[in-house]
Length: 369
Image (cartoon, rainbow, N blue to C red; front, side, top):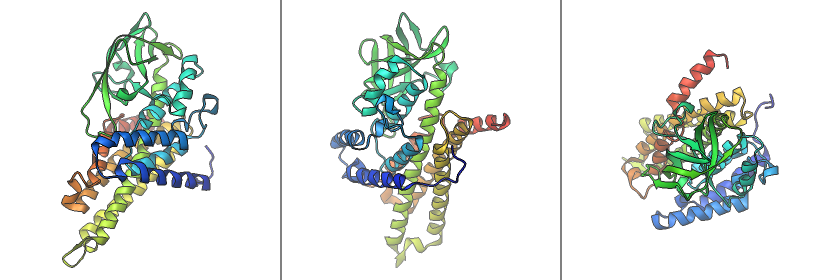
């Protein structure tokens, strides 16, 4: 990337403004809680993201039907979606699965499916984690034989709504990636999750027909590239959630009157709000720096690890502080604060968590990266 100091461009700010207007008006968070209609609203929002803004194809090259932008633009989108605790398949499909496909290099199977993913007419899910629940190549036990996969994948984000699965499986050459369509030999079992806006499922593969993507035995670097992109996206999303919580807490502290004066005048509340503000700004700096790096480089790996390690914990602490500022009303279903807390806690288990990222950082620092 350029050595010049980072600055948001007018185009970035305009993109952010358009996204905020759309999400604030159309997400389930902006409407009265109604579980029966929430799914419909998210489907409508997905169509708006795809048809009006092209979000599913934001980082997909133009040669594959995308917009050809960078992770920086995707991070802007993530932050605005995080403010609204928006659900939908964007993270699972446009980030994890799409980045894995792009990282496989020139491949006919990937090239065939990428335009549909970029246009939002099809969604995908990345299936990697198995019984150990670790993102590690050594733990991949799903096997391929005669073009069919057998194994069990756990906690696959977006699997129930996916039109195609990108599956990591082991063959003689090592771990490879395969395309599997739900159907014969595929059973998808939805899981009970803390954050219902980000559904996950177990995927049982029993002789499921599959097509290899890329070179045999070279699938794990593509998974690592997807994890890098996912960490950057999640960090930006968590910054958006933290900022929304901070704004709401400040407004409540200025308007809620107790003992004849706004609660924001009490020192304990002031300190909590100050902690939230500092924590959020540090998280924003980490997330933006990570998104600004060239994907696949040592600085991108470093930035993604720092952002994931800091932003996840910062978001959870900020969500807890926001509930403390709001008091008992924050834990009612009608109030939005608990939705952010659910997302913050659930995010800790979505990808390699903060503790794993800190161990990775220790290794990177030890090797001079």
